[in-house]
Length: 81
Length: 81
Image (cartoon, rainbow over all chains, first blue to last red):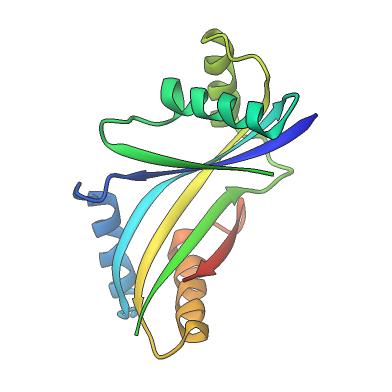
């Protein structure tokens, strides 16, 4: 069976997000001033062949831990559909 | 009121995703072979001060169209919480 894993990878909350601060400044320059904070991460979609949703999730988790996410600075959440 | 806008920005489906192909190769090298396709995009969180969820969504949409997404090559979806 074919599953789609959606992985959201964001910088850890306690870390400064310089990229986010830059975008925040850019939005203010465009006159969009009601945005108070910006945090930027990655959204990764994996198309996985597996026997069950549980197996697909385990594969997505392994891929995230081994390659997709830098767990020193990022956390990740996975949803399977 | 304070709202959190979650914006998922992905490359258009018909476009080649070289970054995704590179990650797909990396996963195979790590022995993770049941992943058939990888697509990589951005996940952006905006903290917005607005009168209503609708107003927050309109602000997030404006920010996406003006700065966050390159609509020639990407599409975006917004959820407000």
